[in-house]
Image (tube, rainbow, N blue to C red; front, side, top):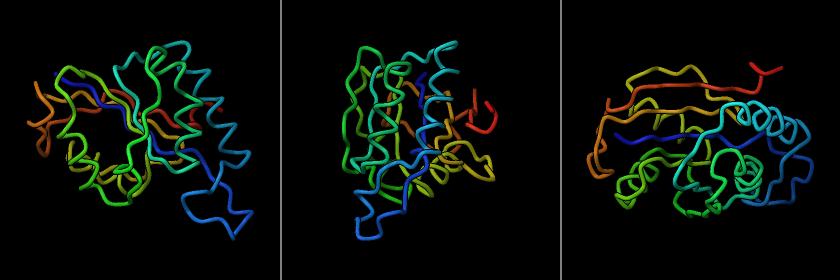
Length: 163
C-alpha cells in the first residue's frame, strides 16, 4: 500500500505581468491559505517519506510553507517534471519513484493534479482549488504498479473549509 498527497500550489500573484509563469510569487491570499492549512495540519500532521515540488516559485513557496507539518524530516525536493499542466508527466514521475518511499507528497499545478487524481481514482472531482490537498491511499505495493482506478480518497482539505 502506498500513500500519495497531491497539493495544488497556493494562489499566485499577477501584479507583475513582466514575470514569466515560472517566476510568479504567491499573493497575500495564497500566503494566508498556507497558514490556514499549516495550522490545521499541525493538529493532524501527515508524515511522509518525501516531498517533491515543481520548481515554479509559487509551488516551491507552498511546499516550503507546508513542509514542517507534512515532511518534518525531509527536505523539499524540486522535480522539474512537476512543472507541467498535463497529468501524464506526473504519472511518469510517480512510476519512477524508488520503492523504499511509501508515502510521498507532490506540490504542483492544475489541471495536471486534478486530472491525475481523476485517472487514479475514477472520481470526477469538480475542482481542485489553490492550496487544496488530496490524500490518497493507493492499492499498489510498488510505484511501477500505478494504474487507473488504484486510488481511494482518504481526505480532501481545502482552505475555504478552514475559514
